[in-house]
Image (spheres, one colour):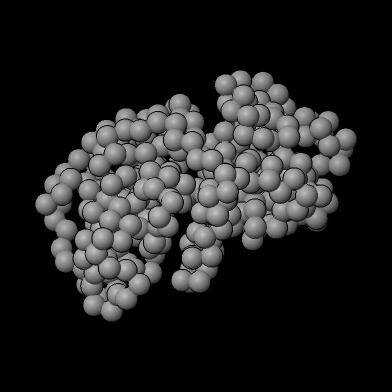
Length: 325
């Protein structure tokens, strides 16, 4: 038996309950991991609240990301063996001291990437990788708006954008977070709690606006995000921190400049072993070369997962958040 955070009904942070669960032996294609540290991401709250239905339904173990050590491998697993240091990102089931994971979803950690760094960065870092390298391949000549620039993905993206040399504009919700975004390297920072970000983007760009907008805020920044785009610009919605974007008439994209819109997910960009390994390797290379420095803002014991989620909802977290096993 191991300790895990189990959700038996969807709702607020109070539904996160610490329980004893049984972890069996790995089956075909599976690996059993003893977890050392767990990454906390806003998507965890979507599954907990019921905004996203959990795969397999209720009850389920919360969490999408962790690092640990392989304890045992099931039949057919050839890429991993006991003692390997590994990490994964995606799905649910991470808020636990040990678990079974499909080998296809695991990444082997290089010797120079520790478990804390991996758990704090894999999901957010691979998200930044596919957003900036694949969904829209950002180049030096581009102007980019990134909402929530002081958040977990935003901090990694800001550093990456600085290395590319693009003109980057971050939005944040407080003066404290504005200082963080500036220190990371965003070219311009907008505090949307007291500034009209649409007007500020127009002022900053001399009316030219942006090639791409990355938006994980959702309801509160839509449709303003569309008004920050050049004609034929790309709106990338990859999260719903303030609530989901409500249904809208596609004609709005035409009216605002023949815009493009996409709703990508990490799972679709890492669906094959080559794609997963390439995405993770690019992230690890940026960390290794100190292009991207991972900031762990706060750490909670696994048993205090509910308090951790309360902090997320209060926008009281900065950078990456971890649960210690």
